[in-house]
Image (cartoon, rainbow, N blue to C red; front, side, top):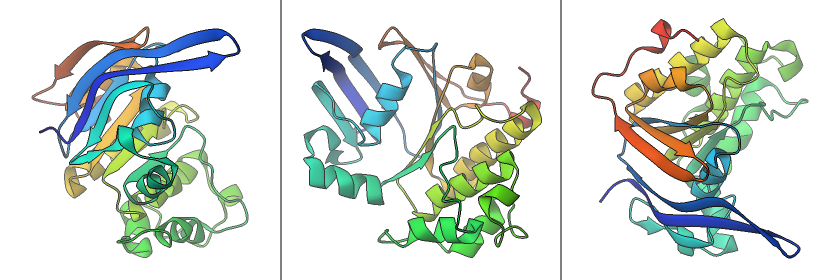
Length: 233
């Protein structure tokens, strides 16, 4: 059995009498420890997919599995526990608490988990050993995103979900964040899933899921992923 499995997943939003199908019969599998890129144009259903996998939204039909757990059958309380313990989120905008230091932001997330990693070790690993006492407003965009990644990793999640994590960053800083995510996946064995509209990022993934008009258009397995250092876009 695959580590992550979507089987015939659909998501329909109702707005009054109008129904909008954001995802239609979506099926794919992901193996544990893979660095996965989900790519497609705006409105293709990428974020809806990520939200369902992350337990922030439910599916209308089909099944979603993580390891041995049938996530699509969870009730509201189970989904809260799932988000708390099993999922680490990294967003385009960093969502840090402004009046907490970098260390305190990461510590805040680790305090709600069953088996958190050491806060200082995680901050060291993302290159912020000298910036732990700084507030978000004293950090660059790239440093703030590193704090966000450290916060997600400190939870020791089963999945690290990243929604356009370089979208608010300049080119060089974006590459550095991609390299950090790629290296984290390789060194920790975490399964990292990143949503993007930038097809250049496909080269660094173990698996690429192409999404178009709410469906999976193609799945590619890359036997020799490139290093993020070599990317150009």
